[in-house]
Length: 238
Image 1 (cartoon, rainbow, N blue to C red):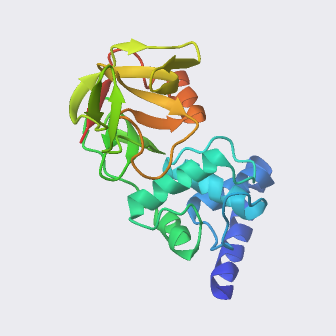
Image 2: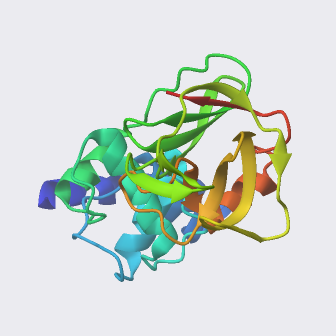
């Protein structure tokens, strides 16, 4: 650990000598975090401080969107950490321990199937949602899809499954929460029948929905703002 910190310190000093006048201290710190984060103390939901901010910069750099880094480990950061842990095949506990730090240092990312064009991909097995732009992975989000359980709706018993296949967004609800018989959805974007990508206040790291793809409300706002869930957008689930 000490050796690694000495190496990072030397690299930081060289970088500062070359670019401090242009980038400034904060930009250099962010560049360092993106290039190779220093192994930090274990952090978890509720943690604060430089280690959390370092984590947030690294998450964003790798495409595990967590909003603007603020040094506070909250809900949105937890969602991003779950996405990393799912991708790396780690325990989905949202605790950033040495194994999770190592995955971040290694730059582990999922491999989408879309090789050209722009699409939303949902890997149901890994429970992650990917935004692919012009064939390149842009974002990886935690998602929760159909639980596989039974539920009663519309006068019949149904199974909570998320359909696989390729679809397109055909309808969007822009005015905040849409409430129906099965609960409330934040700005849902529908890709087949009643199935949608939507924001939720409950996005656990395991399948828990009636069949929709849940993401955080903040992530859904980001998807809307970036035009990633526009009408006609391809949604590929497998």
